[in-house]
View 1 (cartoon, one colour):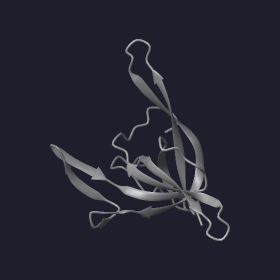
View 2: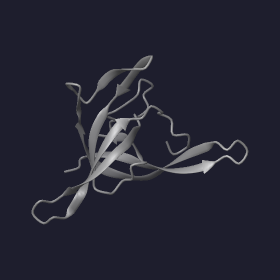
View 3: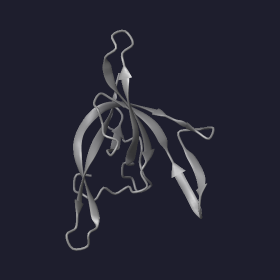
Length: 134
């Protein structure tokens, strides 16, 4: 049962005609029910801090089960409990943004039908989505 909810954002890439720079525009695709499960990383549940070159990298992996197919270029944010309370927040208080890094269909064992999708998500290094829908 999917008692939590989350927002799914999709990307539209454009190129600046003068600089040639690629710009990502993130748009709210839909809000869906979801379930969240932490992924054990380096012996810790759901989070790991690793040495990465000259600094530290914070990884927060989790599985998000959703009823719809989601592209691996999408982002998930605003994960809310049944009371509307955000479960993942940045120190600034804004909802944490997660990148979808993998998607697998969930199959009903009795009938062999797709009943949803399991997304592997990681905390995005870039927390701003550069648009007014965020």
